[in-house]
Amino acid sequence: MKLFFGEIFENSAILNEEESHHFAKVLRGKEGDLVHVTNGKGKIAEIEVNSISKKVVEGKIIDLKTEFEKKNYYLHIAIAPTKTMERLEFFLEKATEIGIDEITFLQTYHSERKNIKIERIEKIVQSATKQSLKAYLPKINDLIKFNEFIKLNFSDFEKCIAHCETDIERVPLKNILDKKPKKILILIGPEGDFSKDEIKTSESNNFLGISLGQQRFRTETAALQAVFGTDWELG
Amino acid sequence: MKLFFGEIFENSAILNEEESHHFAKVLRGKEGDLVHVTNGKGKIAEIEVNSISKKVVEGKIIDLKTEFEKKNYYLHIAIAPTKTMERLEFFLEKATEIGIDEITFLQTYHSERKNIKIERIEKIVQSATKQSLKAYLPKINDLIKFNEFIKLNFSDFEKCIAHCETDIERVPLKNILDKKPKKILILIGPEGDFSKDEIKTSESNNFLGISLGQQRFRTETAALQAVFGTDWELG
Image 1: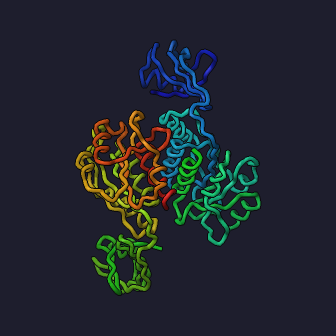
Image 2 (image 1 turned 120 degrees about the vertical axis):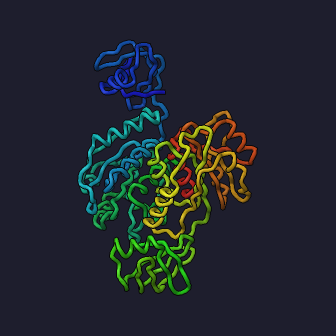
Image 3 (image 1 turned 90 degrees about the vertical axis):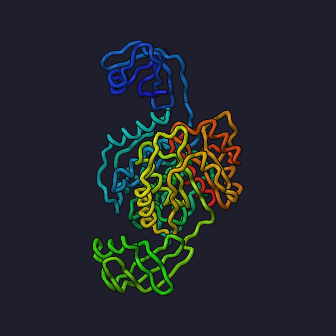
């Protein structure tokens, strides 16, 4: 099964411009071919291609699935980008495969990386979505300052901050997940952890300090632990 | 804290040859420096360096810990190497960080990769062990044919094979972990899954078919899921 991003209408669907190009020029697809199209918002249509132009591949819908493999929770991870982009990219791929809904990049006090290539990150997440045959494309938010992000409105979320300060109270993530939250937001800090000030600011904005086990993990490992744990308990 | 591999004696410890070279030449370490040495078998010693030669750095033990952060389970993963070594290497690093005791590489019917560079793999696991400050070095076993491996003696292990054949009975890994096994062996197949013959052979050798969730994961993602899940339930 080959999955493309596109738009889905009542009886027909089209592939996005880049996907149309890929279908026509790289894969040398033909009229009459059967392919799958997703809108990245839960719909997957099987279509029979009936017209191929330079910019648009279009087809008739044969089969349509809505809310395809919808998860019963919403996971938003806000993470300080790692120094090595490769590690962050691997996290993004695995998180997309396992199940994540939204990712925000945080600029924190101890962040070593001050910029990210958002287009490249979007490509990785799109590619992992297609490869793992998912109908929901995770939402990606560009870098934002910790102090700005923390003040945004997440009123219907279980809000958590994973940190390693042993002298500030933390509860295991497991305890949070036992309450079966519908929406969960988890902040993952940089290699040098969140600063004490950041932890305090988050607490005064109703974030709960959590721990991910006895060990001190690398940033991307902590983030993976959060994604796997949430899927393990709520999936 | 800087951790090196070496040998630990009653009152003193030495760094391995390569580690000695690294200490003396790369890090420009000096007599009187305090460093940590592990034997990879549970011991970690803090030493004060008192002699540096070309091949051996030696020091007096100041502090010694045995069975350092010992886990209460033993996890052995036998995995068909992925086509892209990068994906396998990332798995090895994450598994070492989270907790794994033994890794075997399987040559299966659908394996695309017929060889691995065992020295490179050992280096990655050693480096991840040091980076995450662990005193137990996972054991690495070279590539072995599926049919040979399956007949080895693992009598005190809970033996599992993760596969995607929906018409062969499988139980969720969670159910196995609920029994709190002390030793667990999990087989992870190649991108094209284990063959039906392999699954049957494993069953006649008392392996239990398990599933890792609703989805079909990439090889390295399935393996990570097994490592994270085991740590989540038994760690």
